[in-house]
Image 1 (cartoon, rainbow, N blue to C red):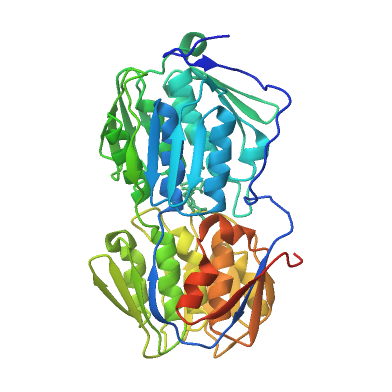
Image 2 (cartoon, rainbow, N blue to C red):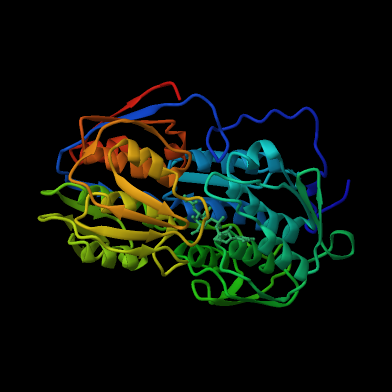
Length: 459
Ligand code: EPU
């Protein structure tokens, strides 16, 4: 058996037999699932506390592969995507204890640098193990994620960057097979320009560069707060990452074995916060305090909500949402951070479905992220799709209906629509929701919404 740089045993290929206990979720999962019933029409009042950021926790969990010893993550949300990542790390040979909000990852004896389709298909972010595995163990075999409900979502930028660092990459039978220079050697630094800012692409290359030989420069990086957070964690591990959160990063690579385990509390989830901000704005008379949020990560949303006539007050880590008048139509175009986040598009569109006048909602990041629109038609919304733009003409009322969504944020938007609809809305197949929103029915229920989960409802 080949030895890794620090003596841990590398096991290449699949040890048979392997049983993967799959946490449910992901782009193409079609298992039976719960539904959420919402009875609309109530103004929301009270406080809601925001959980840790899913999209920060996922790359940080993968970063544990860069070191040995025991790493501890705090403020981790109890979500299906976290369970999927834990299952993947276990498959790779790590010991993982998930006891949200805490997760402990400990290096096991063997490393199997392989992410199988059964896990990757549940969650595209599994591709985040590619950079760390290749950098640390000189090789990786990671299933191609395939398409997703919201778009094709290629990973060419991840692969081109790793190739520029000397990796040999081939695609075989649905897998990316990657090997360090000279048959599994250490990656070398490179100057890489992303063709477009990609969040997980930037994160993959940051982790790869942290152990590469020399100083890597990354240009046109994604600037999302979750990327910045990964930079903070890598630096805690002893890496030298300069510029995370800006579009240019310089990373001085460390010797494999030099990065240390870490203890880190994950930043709050800006998209969860934004989702509750919109939920609160749906009904006139609402007054909600969203607590534990990073206001500076939500600026584009705060500005658009104010333009729509929602009162948004900010103080420290709290955001107060009040609605005392009608909503005004506002146009929104999604863009990489600090632009308006694509992960808030569906929710904002629902808000605009009740505004006075017509708003244009343009999606520039994912080509197929309007799946909530046909479901909203069933609730009485007046929306016309023209390519990447949804023309939303506000209506007086939405009506409760049975609806279903095929991605996480679209599911959240339907629940929000249900909060303002007459009668009862049943949102089916909420496994998508469980990938990204911790205890959503309890949190909304705590604000006075009439909401319940129906176990094992038909899809
Ligand atoms: N893209 C390429 N080639 C690549 C990578 C990306 O063409 O190699 C394109 C994508 O197809 C897309 C654009 O670049 O058009 C941006 O995609 P990006 O790579 O930034 O998306 P991601 O990293 O796959 C993350 C979040 C998503 C979020 C997007 C955009 C995680 C785990 N996921 O995805 O979150 O929508 O960034 O901000 O961080 C969600 O939480 O619901 C979610 C989908």
